[in-house]
Length: 440
Image 1 (cartoon, rainbow, N blue to C red):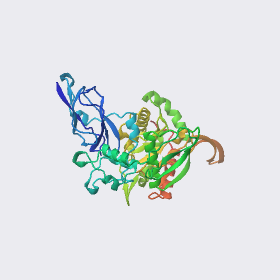
Image 2: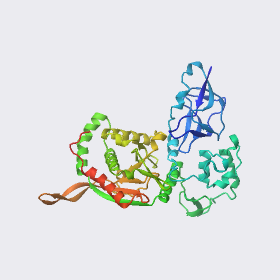
Image 3: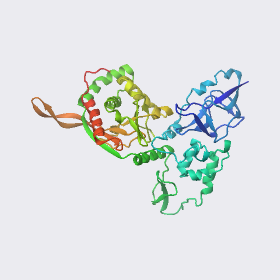
Image 4: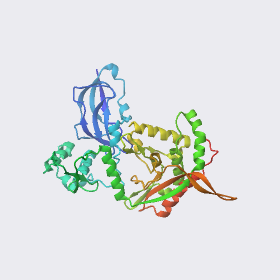
């Protein structure tokens, strides 16, 4: 018999610790290889921690609600000698695969640059874990209220159980709904107000009440936050992409035969946006108070629809270092793994500019909402055939051309109409001036 030490895994470059949400296994229970042992939470993502060895959970070294540093031993698992060949450091450097629940939760990438938490660690000498702070945000608990909660955790820290007990004791009139009533008020909580400030909407006979899943709630909060943070302006340009369409039709068969995957329009759009960002680097920024952060890296987020109908934005890191083939492969890989919920937390963080292809759904244009803490986002409309005036040296002609709208939404605090308009025009120029002899 030997001992295997279960380590707090590394969840991202900027994450140094995590809070234990719950233990999924009790002491004395058998654990299989890759079976989840406990759930943890950071300020960016929730996840499960699996065991890399099969054995029996001998000892839990921390309790639920405790904050544990990355690399610390969480638990001891007794294994047989023949199963104890995996080094302790393997789990430290291994990011656990995120199932659908973790990917849904990971949309809650709290943008600390643009929004301040309700509670700031260090106030009144107290530390609050990301889990406790998230619960406080969701329940509308302010810093003064949180400071009154007695902590039962290590060094008097407020644990999940402590704050949930406080919430339960604060409930004075639980909501109920008469089963036979034809109408009933349903509380609707705004993302920008506490739960004490509630409006009511009547539920009429025959209406269906559908509770939002966790991911939809997080998306809703993020969208409302963005609209309250940034004054949105949207500029539109119509681009003639006839040469681009003809070129893609010419090369997509060979690309499929050579690379074994499809060549879509998305990598072309991303390449044009990357080139335009290099021309106008003040689009690739974030706002922090009265300061502007000019991003060195060009990390392009691409909105992807999930089978559930929700949306997730995987990020192509350092897109300016990729050629068109590399962009195509990366786009396909991220899109495919997004659909089967196999993205890692790092792959949905760190974007500096976002593109969304509304043309996929047959829409000709849209007014997208900025993905904070970025300051701009572009929507690509459907490519449609239209009659158009063609200027030639012999005069104007009417012809059939492939046209599409580009919609550029930007934060008017730091991006004026001139910059926002010139940027989208430059993207259109790159698409219109496509080299039809280009190889990929």
